Image 1 (cartoon, rainbow, N blue to C red):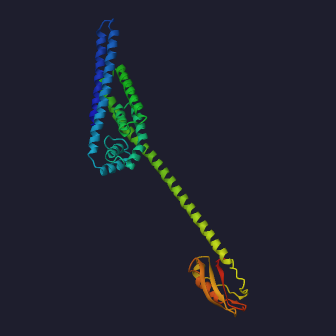
Image 2: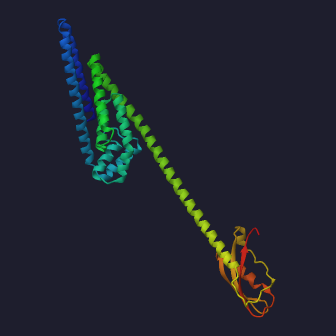
Image 3: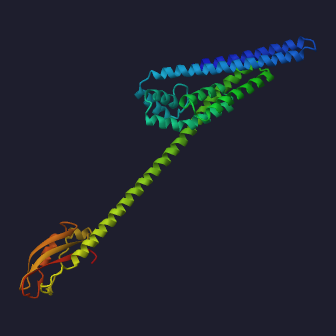
Length: 350
């Protein structure tokens, strides 16, 4: 279908060029008084032919787009999605005709209007499509420019650049047709011009789509890196907050443990011997610190009994050695048994 549209566009221009050549030849045989009238007639004919060729080309583009849309509509949603992803990954963003990411996603949107992934992909592709349309127009590849403009209209009929693109394509094509008429190109020259346009189109499509894919990839990488940095900062902030809360809780517990409860009638305990606890080998090798709060009873003779762990940080690491050490402690005799608490700290560097 793309080749047929190219051929129809070429034949329109060839017919226009041939008519102008015949008009010029006829003018050479007329009297000298005739050129002004003939020139006016030729200009009117040229304008009419140009307008007709442009209208036919636009109709051809619309017909071609409709046929391609119908063909893609026959594919299932899953196949359209897979083909769209593959075309996107292979930098087939809007070409070749009928086998590009944009047309696959447009067909998929018809089947799944609320698909957020499809909407996002089309949003990313639209700026590239508008630029490609302008580039095709500027290199005078009007068949391709009309095809791309039709895709813009299918994607977003209210796109702010659509009317400008359509108008400038018509204006540029009319300017080229006038230039061709003025130059009176031969049929062979016009065929060669169309052939060169096809070559330039293929090369330009490959270069433009590759650059567009690189820009999209850079944009997506930047967004991913920004999201990862934000998540890392959030996790680090949460960890710092948790660490600060834990430190405050430890400080409060330590203050509560070291502040003796008021006991007006309790005798004063005077230690005679408080040997330090043995450091657990595993904790020492790991340079692990901690503390244990032990509650115990000092008998009338100053010996210790009923030693038990009240609180340990970390749990079950220093408990046994702390209790064993407290049981070896000795105090001066007291008038009656006294129950108290002591916090024993374990510091590998102490």
